Amino acid sequence: AQRHDVVIVGGGTGGIATASSLKKRQPELDIAVVEPQQDHFYQPGWTLVGGGVFSAEQTRRSMASVMPGFVDWYQNRVESLDPEAHLVALDDGRSLEYRALVMAPGLELNWQAIEGLEQTLGDNGVTSNYRFDLAPYTWQLVQSLHRGRALFSQPPMPIKCAGAPQKAMYLACSEWEKRDALKDIEVQFCNAGNALFSVPAYVPALERYIERYGIDKQFQHNLVAVDGPAQKARFRVAGDDEIEIDFDMLHVVPPQRAPALVRESTLANDAGWLDLDPETLQHNRFDDVFGLGDASATANAKTAAAIRKQAPVVAENLVARLNDRALNAAYRGYGACPLTVERGRVVLAEFGYGGELQPSFPQWLNRGTAPTALAWHFKTTALPMVYWHMLLKGHEWLIRPDSRR
Ligand code: FAD
Image 1 (cartoon, helix red, strand yellow):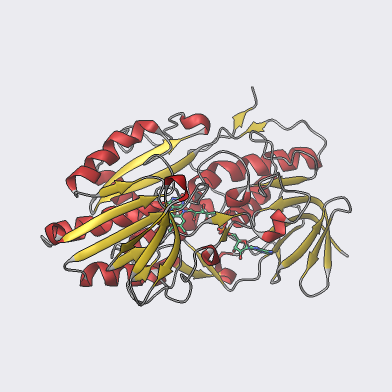
Image 2: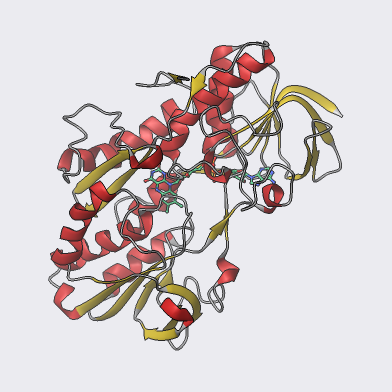
């Protein structure tokens, strides 16, 4: 097996940010990243593609352009993990041995879980901002809809960016309002869960927009089947009953789960996610394994924003572990969700474990639960730059990893 100090699985947000943060702390580390894809995506931008603000191309860069020059990039899929032997098996038969492993493979979108969905996505008015190639279709549908019924679904938790199903809806409504078409479009939000947002502090602000746009919100409505040609969606509702709703436009967010690589490994907890210490992000059973991002079982919001705080903690603790020092850096569950409640305004939600409000930006920018134009400009202009030039490069702007208590 080829040997490296650190092997990182996944060259998405978490993998690249961690490689850069490690390099800042111990420049001579020999780091390998395993990532099969040719492209790297700024997924938070897909909401804005669906809202007609960005082009899809603005959210894509070649993987080669974001992969740090100092790493060995294996353009492979990891097939399996053997944490007891400190080995990672690649899809071409090679294996890599590590002194420390970082797991950042993201999560799996489970489109197949909804009967009839895959064959109609991108057609018959069925779309999703959760795919690069479909987000432009969302905007196309929003522009072409003049009357009828628009459905927006949200699957059971956990999902990445739990606000995104609603963001798609609010941006669509904002456009219809501007065009004075909202009175002829019946908008329904069908949420498998029981609340608009997991952090109660933000719910009243969202409720005001639900009312303003005249949205009919339904809880415990779990999308189970779609008949594209007939434009009918079937939901399982409370008590296991099923109901059918006709639509002219349907924005779907698919159920999400840990990737099979994690689910089927000894690194998973009972629910299939990476079993990490919520504070140190070290694996609960394997000392030389760390993890971050969407694949992890930690109770934060699955966001790129979370990775902004997680990557420095993983880097700090991993370097400590390689140098036989105690792990001192602590992650407090930070995540953020810039809620695009209308075109031109954002509620900048920043919170940690247990829903504790954790504003990281100055008060003139984060005005608590109030929607502001400044936060919209921040989301649409500054944040993509922060992502490409700071987060992925290990420039830990406004970040000092907290110490363990
Ligand atoms: P990813 O960035 O998804 O990367 C995982 C990588 O691992 C991929 O490149 C994949 O190819 C690779 N991989 C998978 N399996 C293997 C394997 N077996 N071997 C090797 N490599 C593998 N976040 C925010 O902060 N704010 C937002 O407003 C926001 N909005 C969003 C809106 C939408 C529509 C979506 C879809 C996401 C949004 N997010 C947002 C969430 C954010 O994009 C993710 O939380 C973040 O990208 C997760 O990073 P990650 O590294 O865990 O996974």
